[in-house]
Image 1 (cartoon, rainbow, N blue to C red):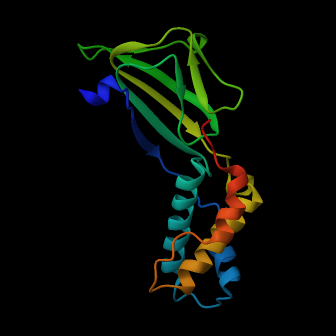
Image 2 (image 1 turned 90 degrees about the vertical axis):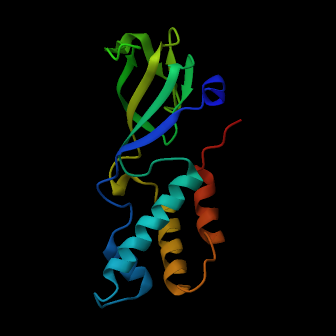
Length: 183
């Protein structure tokens, strides 16, 4: 009941990114590796670095689809995690008898920063679902400092296999300009 009172939504990744913001070839070049022996390991490091970057930045990098769900009602202004939001796929209200009604696009809009949806009237029902696509787009659309931060992180993880040193300061410095900060 506390979760409902405080309106803590559920966030689910519906469609993960099809590609990583940094390719295997780019990572191997940064690592100065010519062989294919560690390709799977390097690919897993790229994915881990991307996930950590997205967590730190509070942004989606390459296009992906998310769904936010509220119990009973959604606030009239909903901050959408993992922006920048490209499109709102739908807003549905599921009634207590489990019938679904899709809210018209005329009843809401994205704010100027493409990080929040604003409703004319707060949607109410058993469950309110907001599904949206977010991210910069293709890997080539991701800002270069973020891509370089991911490469820096991959190199750090590869070179320090036996130690968990966290995200390198150099990567954090590259990311900071793009980090979503809530005021």
